[in-house]
Image (cartoon, rainbow, N blue to C red):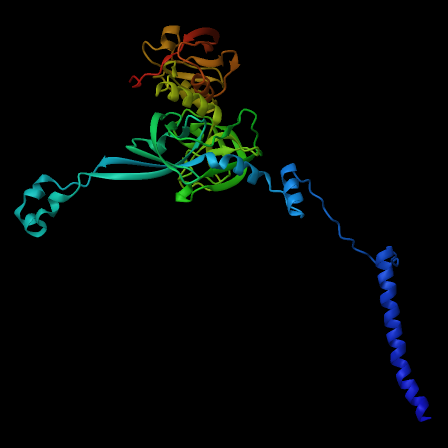
Amino acid sequence: MRDSNKKSRYKQPLIYASMLLLGVILGAWAVVSGVRSPNTTVVTPVTQVASISPAIAQDSDKNKGISVPRNYIVDAVNRTGPAVVRINASRTVANTQQIPEAFLEDPMFRQFFGDQLQRLPKERVERGTGSGFIINKEGDIITNAHVVSGADKVTVVLKDGRQIEGKVIGSDELTDVAVVQVKADNLPVVSLGSSVSLQPGDWAIAIGNPLGLDNTVTAGIVSAIGRNSGQIGVDKRVSFIQTDAAINPGNSGGPLLNQNGEVIGVNTAIIQGAQGLGFAIPIETAQRISKQLIQSGKVTRAYLGIQMVTVDANVKSQVNQDKDFGVKISDDKGVLITRVVDNSPAALAGAKRGDVIVKFDDKEILTAEQVTQLVEDRAVGDKIRMEVKRNGQVVALNVEAAQFPQKFPN
């Protein structure tokens, strides 16, 4: 009886162990063979295979491992980054905090301050930092005009650590484009793209030196195109690219890139304190201006000699109620000429105050900014055909663009 109880006591754990072992074997067989019960969900891990570029594939072969491909931003920055430079500019300016002569001669002031007043510097040095990018092996660098404005000394710092003295060979305030030149061997060069086909939503990458932080990369999208100076509150002859890629002081003059690493614009920090609002000068504008600066050190700019405003219902109402203006308009669209400068190309062609521009070289005109940009794209001496409405009649004018005057007539 005692032996029977003893056997029973050992037999029960053996049965449990056997059942557990059987369960493990059946479970393993189900996983391997894919067999599952109707109420059981089997989650099978999915392996995602990414395409690997030839260069990365070669590295993988060398290392006998798997490499994760870099994204397009890394590729774009690696391609263009070495040609993005920091520009240190310094200028000497008069010290406006001078002590009046009357105080210098006063015995009481001399008693307390002695000769210290005489030793106050009459000049001070202002320093600023911006960005730029090298466009050719000759060492020409595009940057913003405000980065080098009035600079006595310019130093260009390359990503590889080289510091080279630069020379400002030309600057254009109306487009905020300038060219600095350096002399050196083995200079990296950017690839220039095009902004013509840009659309809101396209990728945008900015490289520069914001707030002294060299080689900073930010990315975003093209937020809008064709932003005129009136919309963003600056006095520039530029149709800006808007982006949400962060552009801060120090980024000015650096490149805005597309996803292929090509330069599509020149970044400019023009709205202080803006968040998510960056602007860039289209590369076509920068190229056109820089070419003239490189060739002659200055820009020749077409000039018609008119002042104008975009017509809308409000403008129409104000003009028609203004007895001093002397002209009534019937159109709700077009560009109203509010002034024609004496002896200007427009005056010589017969343009008059109160004319409404409706076509410019066969292009329909809706805004004053359109006219400004179209004139900016023309050369001195070009013949321009304008159609204006005058007293309800269409009048054709043939204007020959002249050189923009150094000082606009009063």
